[in-house]
Amino acid sequence: RLTDHIMPYMVDNGAWTDHLKGVEKTPAELLERTLKLCQKVVDSGAGVRFMVLPDVVGSWPKTKSSLESINLPMCLFKLALPIQDGFKVEEVESLIEKFKPSYLFIGGSGYSFKKHAIKSLSFLGLPFHVGRVHKLDHLCELSLIESVESVDTSTFSRPQSKQRIESL
Image (cartoon, rainbow, N blue to C red; front, side):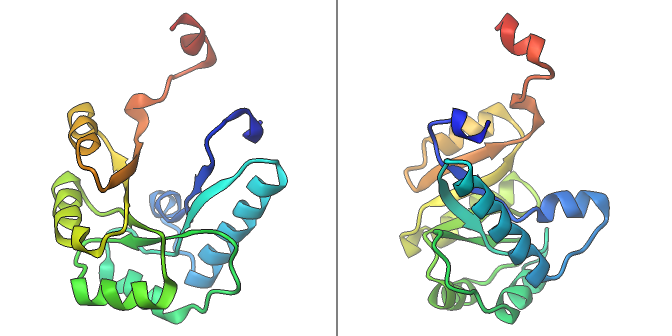
């Protein structure tokens, strides 16, 4: 059950899963799906830490364009602005002005990009959530950066089965 956890949920927009399936959703579809999922989390009795605004995996120009095309309805959830490969600081600042996010969600193609984005954007004073960290040493390195508030890991950290959890 969702309420079995004591921490609130970070609700992603699902763009990565769509990308892996070769499906491209419109910004409006991503936003609608994310808002519905946030409501489902709240209805279950759990909390939403933040929700990720629509993005296009690996492409800042497409992400920027999609974000510029949406008008966010009244939203009760804290927002995370997604950052992708090719971002420009001044464009990020413009989108921060529009959406007033509480977090920057660092996506992008790889770990070197993620480190570059954190270094380039830390002056903005927003905490970072770093997505899809694949190596334990990268996870440890990120944990030492004060402005990195949270990280989501990839499959290396997920047990393969319930039996594995019980054996630990």
